[in-house]
Length: 69
Image (tube, rainbow, N blue to C red; front, side, top):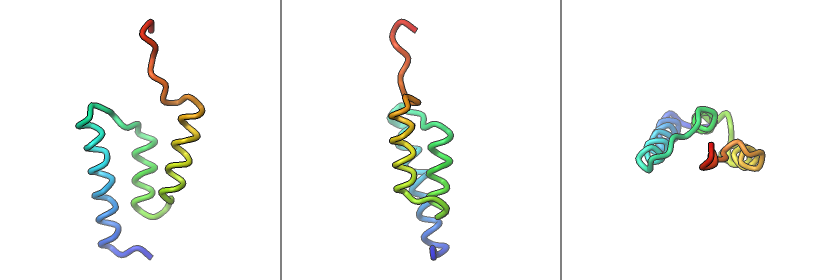
């Protein structure tokens, strides 16, 4: 069972991770942020988040537009 402190620290870690991505010029998509928040709340495991991201990458959800687009 997660304590109130654990939940607070997990939420802080998600906020920091998203902020770091933005500082690098990257904008995390809403679904990924939502999955990370669910992991912070303990309703989804970090492994589930990773596996979901891998599946989404494999499906081509994160492809950059080509230079001709």
